[in-house]
Each structure stands twice: as structure tokens, then as C-alpha cells.
Image (cartoon, rainbow, N blue to C red; front, side, top):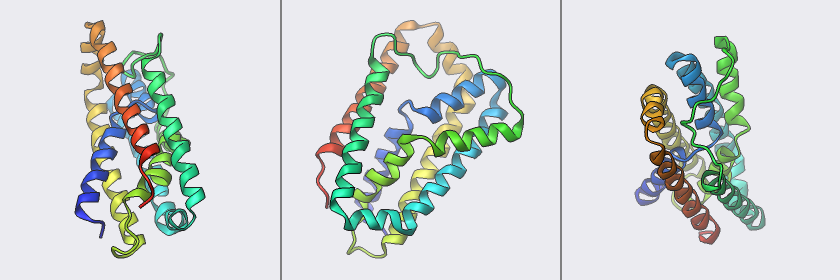
Length: 210
């Protein structure tokens, strides 16, 4: 089992990441606003399947390999930090948009909703950053099975991500309406998310391999 302190720290990082804008949030909110909550939740099921695939890949070899190859680990860590900084800039740059601003999408059938949710997350760099760069930092090789630690950490991330995204889907309409009536809050929301992303990037870039 992971060290309890590290598990809590990982849970907080996972929560911070799921609350920052990325391909999953943009797709789920846009789909929900255009096609309803049921479409959003079905898309979220596809997102969950992609997270499960990432978790299994991490648990059965990739994470353990990174722990034994410092150069590969550091390269992915720095690449992940650079990507998070890019997301931070996208959130705060002039002309940037909030994920809760309305976008028009065509209506899709259930099978396509699930498949698009799956592909959106499978090709989501933030998911790869989470499992290939962040997760290894919270594994202690001498603290039990690396496989078990990977599974517990991955399951924790999945539970947090799916729960938060489900709440976002269920409340997307109300949040979008609130923000549309208060343009100043859109700017606050963008800068808050940009700040969180930048802080995570700095943490990832400066934290040494344990």
C-alpha cells in the first residue's frame, strides 16, 4: 500500500488536475450543454474506460520501468511540466476562453458519445502526464509492491476524477448560466485555473526523484 501521507498528497494533486481545464472538461461540458446530462454522463463513461487503460499500463510495467530509468523519468517529468505551463497560458492568455462558455456541437448517437469520450481521454496529454510523470513520484519502491501501489493510486485518481466530472456534468447548465450573467467571474475562473496549473508545473519541474 502507498504511504498514507503520499496517498493524500496524490489525491490532492489529482483533485487539482481534474479541476483545471483540459480536453476532458471541455468535451464533457460542451457535450452536456449541447445535448443534455445523459449525453455528458455517457461520454464520461468513455473517459473512465480510458483512465482504466492508463492505470493498467502504469501498473503493469510502465511506472516500474520509469522508476529504474532516471533519464526517461526526468524527461517525462519536464515534458509534463512544460505541458501544464502551456495549459496555464491557454487559460490566462488574452482571448482565452472558459470551458463553461457555450460552444455548438452536432448531436451524436450514444455509441459515438461513448467512443468520443474514450478517445478524448486516451489522446489527452494531461492523462499521460498524470500517469507517466506524476504517479511515479508517489511510489516508494521499498514500501511494498510497486504494482499494488500503482493500482491504489490509479484507483484513487479515477474515483476523484469521475466523481468531480460527474458533478460538473450535472451542474454544467447552471454554472454556464451563472458565469454568462457575470462576465467578471469568467475572468476570475480562468486566472484561478491558470494559477493552479502553473503551480503544479513548477512542483513537477522542481521536485527531485525520490
